Length: 256
Image 1: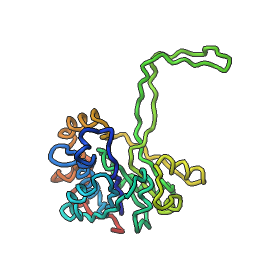
Image 2: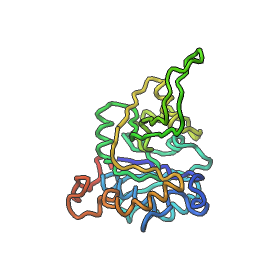
Image 3: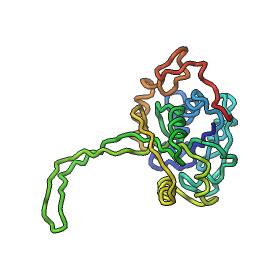
Image 4: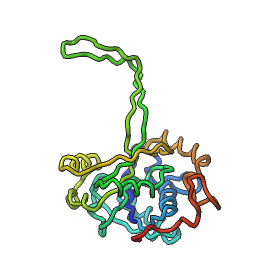
């Protein structure tokens, strides 16, 4: 099983931390965010990883090297110019079977094997891992018809939305919809696939997920990491862990 990890962005929302470090190398406890993700993938048997790098790429490549110290194989593709969140896939060779694509700056307790199994059963071209999130609107919201008449008045409503977690399972045929070395973001790719009749599924997840994109998210991640360490790094437990897997299950998935 192959995973492509997006690690090339400038991380401008997380400034000033990202002025000297690429966002995936921002530390949590004694390791960077991306190391947590790599160790987690290895626990679920995903051993072949390609990092799409760009901003401060040399630091990421120097830190992770070929992945041998983590028991994985890491290769790199380098964006000479920003290609968005989907465009880098056109640079990755050998994506000829089901693969994962994910952001390199997230924390989650998601079970990657369960996501892959769900995706394969669905027959979809793409499966998007999603979380339910509430959006608070701190204003009174009017429902107004075409004649300017107020039909409802909702004070400070709370809206519920399924949001992308930045984790996707892909079939290789998706690559036919990506032009080589052209900028393309994932929302545009998904809309393109839907417009061409491809099946796209959502994998709903109700566990822990945090996108470490803003300073307040990073502060929260620092506060929560010690408490969540056993769930985010299940390899650390000596026997059955909180996610229900045993150390002897820690093998590469077929195809690696």
